[in-house]
Length: 310
Image (cartoon, rainbow, N blue to C red):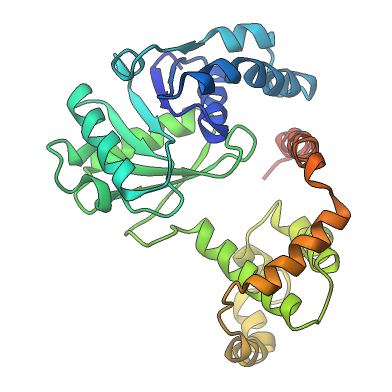
């Protein structure tokens, strides 16, 4: 790739996006309104890129990839000549409206403006903008330089050309874009993740299992299959005759279970108990170290998956 990409916000997600596009060969303009965030990010970027190199996920020297990420002194400098602007600022509707109004005024009509928002729909912050036809959500999974999924969620007025251009840019950067056919709060991943969290919290709150054992259900059970195939392909393979056969065997039981699954209220008492159990397993001081461990395990998994055939 030889397009320029602008990344707005130098926090965790912004840095990860910068790595995604820099390793794909793009010049990246990185900007944050907080100067300290830009000062802090260089060492973190080099650490992450070096970890990728150790796992064989980049062929270039880490310094060469890092050199393509250039710190911008202003928003205008960051977005100048960009094919795509990926916004990663705080998750409030007011902040999104303000930044996209500024981006719409600064960027030419051919520049795609994408938000990394996890919950807000593009229609909520682009309705009044002249260039609303090129604004969409490009929701990543944390961290996007390791987990390639990106959800493209256009507003009703986002042009088909903008959607296709975004899809092409993300694909060529090594991501796996999926397209939402219509807007919904939380998009696809967070809604599916929310359903799992809802039931896990209910089972925990009602005393059916410890937090550690519920985590094992996913990491040593469902998660092993779901790292290579989704829930629909899973059920297709879990009955001799495929989906219909599976539904006939287990559908009635799933329907009865679903009737008993209530929304979880995320009550403070339950969360405090969960927090205490987690801190007994991992102290707060160890969270950053464990996060890097997670990222390195993800790198090993990505490297393994690259060597497999579909």
